[in-house]
Length: 188
Image (tube, rainbow, N blue to C red; front, side, top):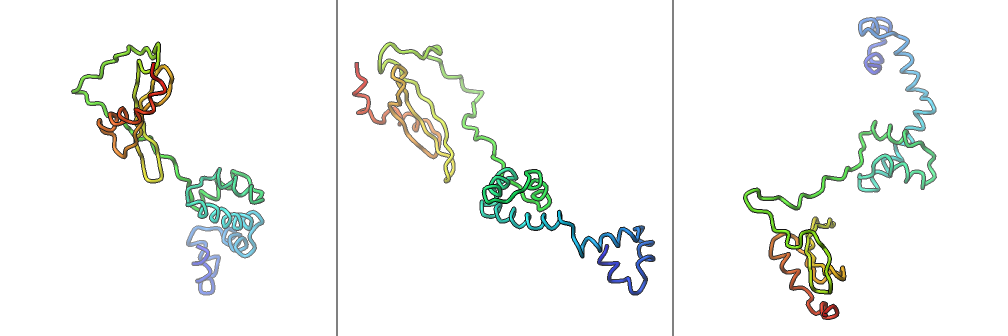
């Protein structure tokens, strides 16, 4: 608006333009004064915006307001967290939100559930009498990998494990074949 008024003020005058645009002339003059001589807060905000954008860009555009604020404090910039939040919101900068976890188990309703052969009693009288297995996923820079492991319930040690990029049945069975030489120390 102010630019339009500035361009046409010589021809029509400020008062008549403001009357047509339904703007008080005092509002126009106040805006022009703020642009020529900004207040201390807006000057400080402009400096902080540069610092905030620098920190955000240096950290791969993933930092949110809290981490940007902590980094600025480490650098000796005295600023309130709410100020960082306000300026990041104004600049459209957002931190990355962690995604939902990967769903590793998709049960097939047509197939029966596996039997609980130990009736949830995870106790063994001696080594190598009861082994249990499980697998989980681990997030890496390359994506997710799956880790299957066999645990001796008595000693609570992993007696075999395997890593795979896919979760298939043979992958868990491969963990059973892994490192049988490692089991010799637990023989009864």
